[in-house]
Length: 261
Length: 308
Image (cartoon, rainbow over all chains, first blue to last red; front, side):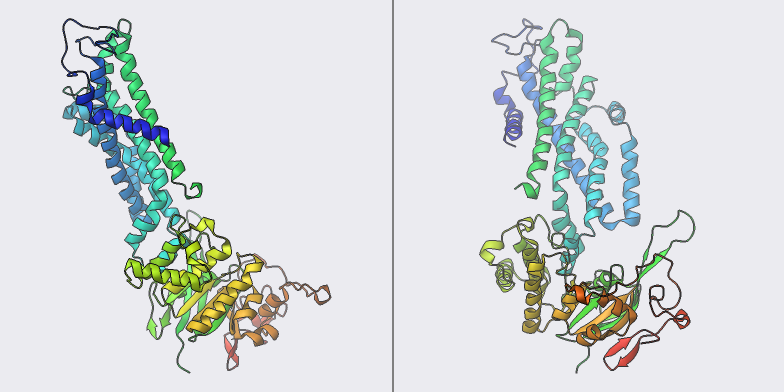
């Protein structure tokens, strides 16, 4: 639990304090240092426009984390609500919610995101919305299954006999039981959202006014042989961040098991 | 004597069985027209084998399950849905407690919702109940259910039921999942609470030892119907219905010299029309093709058999 949390703290700190940490303006290039290798002046080298890679990388963490966290929170909210309604009410409501969820699950994620962004124009808000809309069914399915199983549990019956109204039972008695698997999913959602955002950036569909890891990789394509640093560092950053969120999910699952306390 | 505190009349409840994709769905009649009355402070046993409809009946009485037909009255008023004065103690002590809440919080819940007490008062009241059911609150109040033994959890379950200040307690196999050594303690607790609070108690059980120990009256259920009902001593010592006789004979006796014949095994054959016990009854006769009605053998002894 310690290590992934520490890494997350570091990432958040990088993103929040980017202007203070980064050596200079990430988007300001210098003509006398194009594709410069690693040096004391540019610890991670520069890109084809002479921009400092360290500065780009630090500022890029903002985009990745913002997209990852925001879309995960949105998909979590939709998914928990839809899953709770479907699982608790069952029957007709369940069937309706699940058919909608299946519809979204059958859509090829990346292709749809590409099409939407290509048609609507790039923008970080649109990326977040597209990812959230595509990711919620998974959460909804998990929540629904858990709640449907718990609906008939004896402790739920006991809460009803204790005078708790249905919505309060769902909120206070049942939903906390699904917190574990849902948090795991949310952490994984962050990771896939970061990957998806990077993918969009790689295809040149990111926000052109923001430094992002995906966009950095996009530009690095042509210089794979001549300037390895342009592709390696953003790649490492993406990989490490995704890994951190996966580890966080696992840690959350372990610590939320009441028997483990 | 005043009227019964809890009265069920002609309760019917069926369950749809998973059937073929096409064609009629089969319906299992778990409870087929049961009438029961419970007087204030009385202790009634509901006995019968697995599948006799005991639990379904108990769930309907506390309002957790809706009858397909028939009415339940509490002090003369028709009940629908869970009500504060009618509470339940569950069989599976682990499943009956929220695994993420401390047992103290579980006992506070009825105080907070059913009785609308402020938090501090609810906690004080819950702690007092812990002490009453024999769990020192300073040791147990903040524990999670998995850190308690089955007997301790059942004490928590009883405390929670009492938290609603009920007049009727339905206890569904409250000791069947417990070690033999703690059964007696829990049964004693039930008896004490009944005496102390005037609680009417319905014991759902298949254990005739429990029936003798804590109940005054007994109703014998077979395939969703009451086949015999009367004072515990009378029904247990002189059972008149062949099913009650078989049930009593099936109780293990530790003395081999007093070994009793075992009843015939239950056939999974289709339910025959007429008396529900016909297929297994040692005294079955052609007359049993017509269903017997529940009739008075004595003023307080009811039976549903042509020959008793």
